[in-house]
Image 1 (tube, helix red, strand yellow):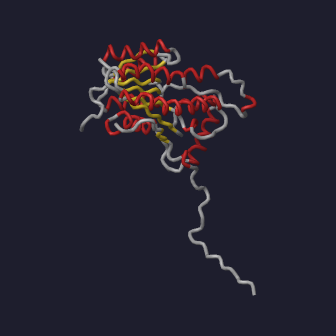
Image 2 (cartoon, rainbow, N blue to C red):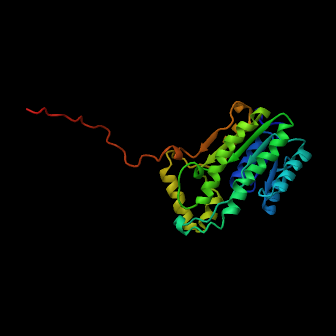
Image 3 (spheres, one colour):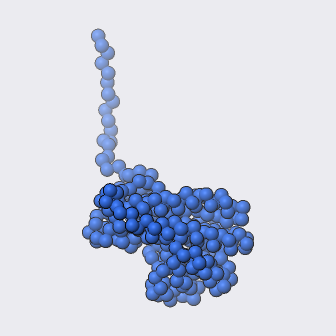
Length: 274
């Protein structure tokens, strides 16, 4: 079986989390060498040890452009190049019952990681790729940035901005043979939701609602997102750029039917006035 990403070097930010780990594992399965980036040093080093010699860890705060540039330099120096960049690192704000009660104190932190971090990663990787024959960049957004949801307005705004940024920069970088695409996961069980609610019972209830409105029966997994990322960075998508791919079991297309119509309906008849 041919490994689609053989001889390619990838960076995955937020690699120590659920989505980041799954993406990194998929890349390694497909023959890539992977630099794992995360702000959590212990978790990142542990993951690198689990994944083997084709994976290396570099502690990185994506909100700091100098650290992001150092990350790209590390990948090039360690593995000889950089062909794939996945800007996956992200945080959520604390869920509130109403925007009127939101104090907006998380704004700078959320935007600096979720949006500026994506911008820093795209720019630093893009500069290397432009000078080296091209590459592929995937930015991780969320269906929270594509459809209206209450409770985490800053998070939703940051993820919506990632979508629009990705489309715009895809146009700008196309001349350098750099593809930029965006993925919006939805209903994937990760620690991000737990950090937003800070309440296990609330997290459980929200996940139950997500499952109830999702059209597909099977719940999504981090592996589903990883497969989508692998497609967008591989040779099967060489003419795909500026695209938003949702991985949400159909949720963003519309909620599933709860009440089914009758199997047959008798035709109505009209009586002509005499």
